Length: 603
Image (cartoon, rainbow, N blue to C red):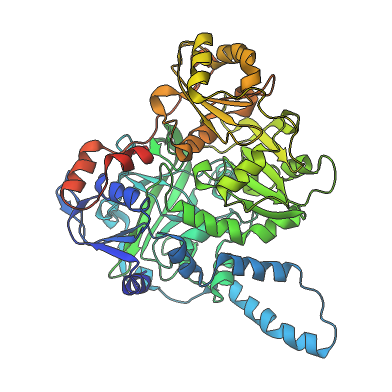
């Protein structure tokens, strides 16, 4: 970690903050603002404090480690597409023909030995300072509270190492960990994760589950923790492949779990399968709070560190955030593996304001009728891709998937209600829009064909369209049309919701000659002139089975749901920065923002 920080500072990628900053909201708010700037930097807080407890911590805190594309590429050592190319080459390796081909293959095969982690004898750098049993104290770590309504402080960049009951598999995951006290952490591993599957094994056997949490070290460790590898594959194999050198591991002091020897902080412990605690709320990467739920608890048995550790943390919330750049690496590197399941896939992209699993764009070779729908089912059946809620497919003649203006126009010129597939499947545990947890609607859109023939029969200006909508329903407060030059303009409607939006949809059919696509959002919580954040809101807020109609036109209800919609779960609130904290940080020169910045990112 310190080697990386020295390099980043030398190359102008690090911002060092010498002024004391509070682990309660201040540091998280600074990082939250920083990553939204065009010249985002890695942040090193030299003097973290907890003013509520009157504590100044001895270890610095690094945040926004994956600050931009260039910094992230430095961690990989090359462009992620180059790594993807190496994986693709490996997947298509054929038996060599003749001596020269055999000799040419030797270096490649020899380098594969670096994939496998090496177990070291003795202690590692991460075990220079050891505190066991009652001496181990989580309060000595600068654990952050990132949002005003969070249930407490959370470790947000924890590498969570677990092993199967029989010891045959080890897993590295990235889960948030709530600090309950000096020696207790909440384990937020969701039901679909490998660690949760291991937990079930220990619970069935009636045994306590060993867990080791590491923080810091090589930034690639935490990236590997969120990589969507197949079940049973240890994530540090990926580390060895990317680095072309094996991860060097040492054994935890109080359990049998092996961890990288150069991490900064190690928290060892065990989880009693019979003991659950209420975890949360927590302002999550969806931009909403995830609500209180019972999760397992880890009892700490030891904390070890380097002599000069650096604590690593992140903040999640509304986009863009550093998970944009972590996700970019994942997206590019895993393309060849996705092609093994969907061989006609050309490319795919997950826009960060679609919150990754909520929206995916895919480019494919379309060979026959229904091919895109076949792809949709393949996507929804593959590993973490099964959590994707909305998938839009285009053919090989489409513009680049990251040229949003061009590809959106391409999609809208090919959008046909007949080519929408609405179905049901599993959704992420963090999804709040579905009527029940873990299962919800899926929307697939096939835009692989040619342009549609018919556009809007009788276009209206925004002003005239608003008048027409208000004659139908006076609670319509605004409308803005996007991509009016395409066959399927999108009319975004701001609505003061006093009744189910379905009742508005029942009347909108009368305006079908003026409209093709209508998206309704809450008037009080959305800016119709901010398409970036509208995408974020809509992708988060809809369950396709409940909220999408295709006749007589495409209509989407992206409002918050409640009992009038038959929604019986608790609808979570957005994450918002504390205005007083923002004001204090600005007065101290730690952030520079104006009202336009606050409005642009829904701060």
